Image (tube, rainbow, N blue to C red; front, side, top):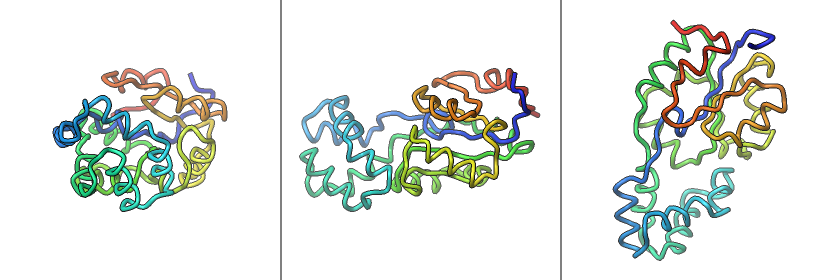
Length: 205
């Protein structure tokens, strides 16, 4: 039970408010390149360049041009970027709960993400306005779990760490804020968010 009441709730985005999967377009490009989807995705998301893209160190054009070369898909930058964004699906129950929480608490986002994903997501999902501020790694130049992204989030939200909770599906992204004095909630895919919030005495109406 928190020593101080929770006043601000910070959410991760992927696997918390939208699901993640290997979409059909990504699978088609993997087949086109002669690779399994597992190998194909590993080459995309395990590369340090992907992390730099999420830190805002590459433009979309630079990133997808080089990625297309790496994947033996030269000339397919447009198709690759489209497939790169075809990985999300809605989690309506989670979003509905967030909308209810927004009636009682300020909500914010802290997400390791990139310009292509955010442009896609914000144009396809209507829940983003309930989160203010939205802290995106590519805009602030820092990725979770670097302390700076959490400090910026508190600053932008006007929140106190001891009265804030951060919800993420990856435990590794919770170690830093927990060490800084935040409340944290590890929420694996499929977990019941409402039940997980009960120990924090968060009001849900």
